[in-house]
Each structure stands twice: as C-alpha cells, then as structure tokens.
Image (cartoon, rainbow, N blue to C red; front, side):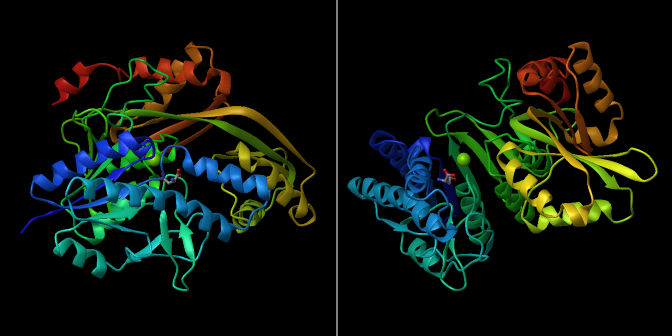
Length: 413
Ligand code: ASP
Ligand code: MG
C-alpha cells in the first residue's frame, strides 16, 4: 500500500507561472516515488496583501465575513493553476477548496481553528489515483460560512490534513532552506538546524520567527506529525521538526527570535487590590486583545502600576478599551512607550541549566543594551529592548551562545 505524503508550498514558491511549473515538477517527483500526494498551496506571491489593500480601498472597516470571502479567493487561484500544470504533464489532479476537502472550523472569521476534517471525498480521490490539491488557509463552519485560519494559516491546513489522513510526513516547502538559529537576513552567521524539537519550534514561531505558523507546530506536536521545512527552489536537506532531538538536545540555546513593533503600556495608579490584575486582563481578553509580558509594580500600599507589552497595531484599541472602563478599573492615567522590540532566546536545554537568563542579561549589559521588560518560561527568555538595539542584541547573543558554530553540533552528536 502506498503511503500518503502532504506537501505544502508557500506564496513565493507559487508566485509565478514558472514557479508553479516548477512546483508541479516537485509534486510529480513525489508521485514517482510511489506515494499518494496531497498538495496544499498558499495564494500566489503577495496576493493576500493585495486583496487586503483592495478591501481597505473600498471600506476601511470591512466586515470579517466578507474579508474571508475575499481572501479565500487567493488560494483558489493557485489550486486550479497547479492542477492545470499537472494535467498538462499527463497527471490526474483534482483541485479542492477548503470546504470541498472537508475542513471544518469554529465559527470565527479571520482566525478560525480547525475543529475536524471529513476526509471521505479526499480519500476517495486519492484511492482513485489522483493528486489532490487543497486550498490552504480556509475552511467552513457548521453553518456553511467560509472562514480563514489567520495569516500564514496554510501551514496549519497542511499539518491538519497530514494528521487526519495519517500521512507519512508533511513537507513544508518555502523560500528558505530550513529553520535557522536566527533570521539569516539579519545575521550572516545564522546556521540552518538539522533538527529542532516541537516545543522549541513552537516558542520560536510564537516569538516572531515567521518560518512556520505557530498553530501548525502545535497541531504537529499534538498529533505526532513529522514536519520538514525545506526549500522549494534548491534541492537541499531541510530541517526536521520532531519530538526529541537527541543529536542537539544538549545545546542550551538553539535559536533566537525577534520581533519589532512592540509597545509598552503602563496603567498607573490602580487600586492595590486582590482583583485588580484579574479585572484589567479579563477586560482586555473580552475584547480579544492579546497582551504579552506583564509587570506589576506596587507604588505604595494603596496603589499599583501595571505595565504590559502589546503589538503596536493593537495599541489604539487597547487604550480605547481601557479608557472605556476607567471608572470600573480605577486608574489615574495611561502611559505608553512605542518603538520597542522583543528579543528571545529559546532552547529546551534551559530547563536543566540555571544561569541562562543571567548570561543573556550580562551579554546585553556588556553591549550597553538596556532591557526594559523580561519574561521567562522553562525553555525561553524574552527581553524587550529599544528597536534600534534589536539586531545588535540578536547578533551579540548569537555569538555569545555560539549559535553560528557548526562544531558545537558535531561535538554533541
Ligand atoms: N495566503 C495566506 C497569507 O498570506 C495564507 C498563507 O499563505 O499561509 O497569510
Ligand atoms: Mg508562511
């Protein structure tokens, strides 16, 4: 019995007629290896961004329902073109939208989670020998509303299909050759990792490494789907994402993620009471506003200040909501500092190695970089710094934790 392989190609990889032809070649290669192939594609090139611009030119506050209706057309272009390319080469292919592929989601526009996949139709196409091409990033609710899975969501479509079909593997083809110790566009010594653990990848993805959709990694971890991130252009080995990375598990820090457009908001003069924290963050959560690092500072026995970081795009809405509830929350004023960035180190070896955070702070202090906020988990340390120091901080940490040195990997293996 042949095995099922899921291949996913991102926007750049299908960005032109030539690239789609090239992708068709890749797909055929997998078919010739004797596998049943499901292909998930993104919208071509910058199509999704262009559709967003188009919508905003018509209506600055478009309804989320119509936004999903619009954005899902991008992927629909790619599935049909890729199917045609495969047929041109004598292969039987069938293109399916998210709903045709049985991808069910919760009823949330713009950022829906997949709830289940009804694979009957898909499976029957595979059984009849067809290459199945599925539109990424989209699904349908129980009441037949079209939804999208959030920017970058095609990765999640691919992993979810791999899990539902019990595929042998899920290859994510992209415009980089794998997962790097940090973004190679900023740090020239960044090194491609042979393998990385789900949890580490999940942290990196959540902390701003754009290479994979965080939810896709979460899905892969929960269902034990082996993921490979690799280049659609160059035929070189990619990065395997799996449960245990024995070869490199002794490395304390495995990657550095960073993200700009961070703002710190400080709510001043709050009553120093038992429920203050819960009230303020419940209020924000009820408005679906995501808060990241939180710091509470007691000013005296009656008042406290609470600072938290948010993405800069969410600042005005966050402040609007806080102002709206000022009476109930009881604060005196709100301060904000924009132009910040978050720099994080990630590695599962941190759990058993005390002093990693200390070393990070020491490196930053030596470089004269002021740390404005800190948060830690078992496998990461995040710092908020001035955006002008972001790349400087990443470079210094990359050197200090020896991430550019191939030899570290060899010694440990
Ligand atoms: N086309 C969508 C986006 O640009 C989804 C994806 O590419 O994964 O975000
Ligand atoms: Mg992507």
